[in-house]
Length: 193
Length: 357
Image (cartoon, rainbow over all chains, first blue to last red; front, side, top):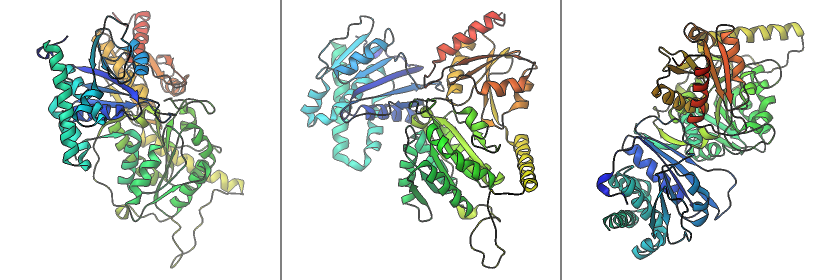
């Protein structure tokens, strides 16, 4: 497990977020891209689009880079955030060798087959439920992702989420902040063990 | 103004509004539905703006034609099959010398095709598209920020030359979010007055705007008038970007999304020590012919890369003639090449022609 101190600044990193509709998958990508923008990095956000059904799968690709971004598409992402089992089946194969998958261990009931990628399992639904609402599962996950990868700072994620959900008021902001920090703390505990 | 993360289609809508566009009519089609979505919401806040979801593409383009006659800055948008339906109207608009902005967020074709990003409408856009031998100015953005500048420029060009202008993007340009910033909005009432509009005859003679000229001689004279206008546009408005072309022995020519990917490929090839750059046409018509020809003083091999089977390729060949060898790599149907793929094509060609030494 990579420890916090080993994190280095990454010149360019692509992350795929995938899950079923309603899990806040596109929102996670939007939060990461907004945070990158607020840190004056180059960012692109590319959603999957087209004929989708209610409750069907959703995914998006976010690139965060120190330099202008050529293609916003990721054939081989550095990280994949996979919120359900179909997402793991679809995206495991494409993750770059040495890359990381972040699994929602509450819903993903199979283990990745590959041995050349790092696997970070987080029970984001359980953690969010304990904090008050499973709807915050995506916030727990983005906290974990950012703490593990160092793509952007935890502080800018919290700031971005605050501005994105500005209209929802301070109660929602407090809940979100708590969820993001819990996700980060979970990863810290993993790397400490 | 601070940067904001915005979807390409929404950027087009906001930039159009800031350029003083106050009439929009359209009919839904993926992957550009977010343009009418944005216009409907944005125009709801403006007292002097009209949004219409028309009953068809045909209706939408004819509404734009009518609105333009009254002097308002007018826009419609669609994607490939929908643009084909609008072509009759675009020909009429050209024949009536009306300004209009038409956005084509291209998808894979031919026919109904798919909804993936493609550049298969290059011929249609740059050769007029409809009947009667007219031309349209064609602008090809390759980033979110360029969607801002080129959308706004499209309205200025349309008004200056009284001609339809095509903003040619693709599904990727329309769906992708990037940070953008906008200039201050233009007040439509401060735009130059148009002395040809249909706005009531009180105190003046009647005016006629029509594309009907039954007398062949009259029709010929009108065509010569258009020809002079097109010559002026070709002379003045060609625009391109040179990327890492200083000292290059090999050049890639690509536009729009393909140019983004080509930049990545060029960066990778440069890192590998190859002397390669990118020539990116920003206007597809007029094509930056002279500028590309000038490049052949130093570059003898050119790779054209497009998300189609080779359409801009013809304009590149016309531009360089016998002065350079022109090679092609293309992916039609909505496939998005990786920079790595294009880098490999560059490397193989440079190896083959001993340009890698």
